[in-house]
Image (cartoon, rainbow, N blue to C red; front, side, top):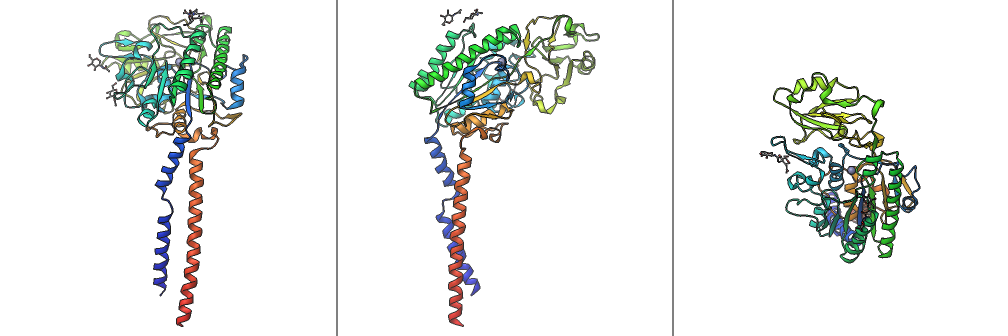
Length: 465
Ligand SMILES: *[C@@H]1O[C@H](CO)[C@@H](O)[C@H](O)[C@H]1NC(C)=O
Ligand SMILES: *[C@@H]1O[C@H](CO)[C@@H](O)[C@H](O)[C@H]1NC(C)=O
Ligand SMILES: *[C@@H]1O[C@H](CO)[C@@H](O)[C@H](O)[C@H]1NC(C)=O
Ligand SMILES: *[C@@H]1O[C@H](CO)[C@@H](O)[C@H](O)[C@H]1NC(C)=O
Ligand SMILES: [Zn+2]
């Protein structure tokens, strides 16, 4: 008899479960509602905007943006802390060793050919190395995307490019505020308003250039930060004028910071040709004179010799065999990296034959150095207001953007848990609440049934007795 009762109970319980929407249909329901409420997203990068650049100059527009949105203490860029590698981390959520854009320069160690930053933008196979940038992923999931001057805009990725794009011209003046405004008018007025794009990336080459040329502590850099601040005000006004304020999220960040280069009598410079025992005759291919990081491919059988000589040559030069790079830098496991990697301490740069770099500011240093940290601000309908958040890694911007756009991310090295506390109400929270509700009602229904059946069972037993 007891067995019969149990069978009845489980039968009823299972039909009850079937009546409750299964997990899959709940998330389907959820993603449909996400799409209907999805806001547009604008990702802006101001190249080389160090995390603290707003602290020694008036920035009323950035301050207003922080009041209306989110400000992070800083973000930690990936290593190598230079422009193309770091921007591609923003676009893919992958560390540099995993996305493969390991340097601003493209090179071939066999032919000795090198391409500088601008020309390297057009080498498809360099960028399209197994990691898809967010534009392509978003397009494949039905969104409309655009990019203006953002590094990585020019290449074709598995046969696709970003839908609407403006690639920067070869000899472009990156500092002209009038041009900046024209670009903003195009992105807000044309791309978002008229063409109804969902996601756009927008790049500005400053204050990087001012930081390099005059140094991060110079009045020229401060002046450029004021130009950036006016531009942020201009962008937000344009968005308001087009009635997009409540439908458009803005993330403003940067690829790296800037550090003052020590010169003259201040320091003993690192010049490889002057190091006793070192000879360029032992080197098959070199990537030097590019700030604080260099790479060497020694000739066959010369690796140990070159390594041993350089290792002890200068107190501010660190030399690693590629596979012995500190794991936290994520700059080791990629076939494009050369066998020897040289990294200088902040303040120093690595010269080859003789000094050719007279910049007052440089980046490329270890991403733990505070001077390499970048700024991060966000504002819009999905972001909390007047919130200051702790620092996080730039790789985490990618899952945040995918979440805001309601798209499934590719495999990446970031995680939403590091950024989702900036958002007013996250989809996963709603999901969680819904599931708890369904779980509780199912349990309550089940208990009521057990109660009824138990009673009727005992009544039935009673009548028989
Ligand atoms: C470098 O050049 C050689 C010789 O032309 C070629 O075989 C090789 O594929 C090239 N490597 C890359 C990464 O372009
Ligand atoms: C990435 O590039 C390397 C050469 O630089 C090549 O050997 C490798 O096959 C590429 N991987 C993908 C997935 O494109
Ligand atoms: C770029 O434009 C600015 C004005 O917006 C000007 O001051 C600067 O000299 C120009 N730079 C070059 C290299 O032409
Ligand atoms: C700045 O850009 C505007 C618009 O492209 C152009 O008319 C002007 O001549 C530029 N100014 C300088 C100094 O290059
Ligand atoms: Zn940069």
